[in-house]
Length: 360
Image (cartoon, rainbow, N blue to C red; front, side):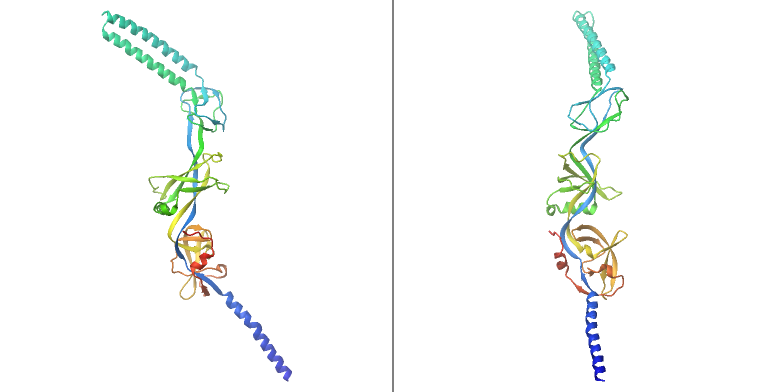
C-alpha cells in the first residue's frame, strides 16, 4: 500500500514539475514587444522617375529642295562644330548666283552711264538715283543667291553625336525635311516631378539640406558614378498632377548617358518633426501598409497608414498614426484583429537606437 501511495505522489510531483515550465513558456510566447512612433528631425532619400535629355538636342532639316548629293557622316558619329554633314545638289543655286552677279554688273554699268549723263545735265539726278537703286537691288539678289547656295551645305552648329539618318544618297529632299538629329551629350539634364509638400520641404530646409546634389539610378539599377546638381525649378505647378518639375544637370564624360534614356533621381529630402516607425512593425495588403495598434484594453486593431518616405529600417508616416499610439513591434504574423495580448513596452528611442537611422 505504501508503494502505491509513494508511486502516486511521485507521479504527481513529476506532472507538476514537467507542466510548470510549459506554462511559463506559453506565457513568454504570448508576450509581445510594443512601442510608439517617434517624432524627430531626419532626412530620407526618395526616388523620382526622370527623363534624361541632352543639354542640346536639335533636328537638322533641309532649308532647300533638291537631291541629296553627299552624306559626309555616319549614324552615331561624333562631329565637330562647323563640320559639313550633308550636301544638296547646288547646280540650280549656283546658276541663280551667276545670274544675280551678271545683273549686278549690268546695273553697275548703267549707274556709271547715268552718273556721267547727269554730270553733263543730259539726264536728271532722278535717273542717277534710279540706276543706284537698281544696283542696290542687284546686290541684294546676289546676297540672297549666296544664302540659298549656302543652304545646300548642312553643317553642325555645335559638336555632338549624329542620330539616325533616314534619307539615303540620291533622295529627293523637300524644304524642311528631317535629315538627322544632333545631340550634345557632354552634359545631361534629368527632368523629374516633385509634389507640392516635398517642394516646400526642399525649399524651406535649404540649410539642413546642405547642397543641391543628387544621384542618378540607371535602368539597370546601377548608380551613375557622378553626382548631379539641381539647377532649375520650374515656375508653375501642374494643375492636373499637383507637381512641379525639377531639372538636375549631370556630367557625362564617359558618354554613358544618351538623349531619351530614363532613370531615377535620388534626392535627399530633409524632414522636420517627422513621425518615424520601424519597418518591421508594418505589414502589407494589396500595396497598402498596415500596423497593429494596441488599444486601452490591450486589444489589437489593424490600421491603414500612409508612408511618405523611408530610410534604412524605418518608415516616415504621413498619416494614420500619432505619437501617442502604441503599435505592435514584433510577432505581426502571429496575431490578428481583436486579439488581446500581453506585452512589454519598449521606448521608441531604444528601438530606433538599434536600427541604422542617420538622424540629423
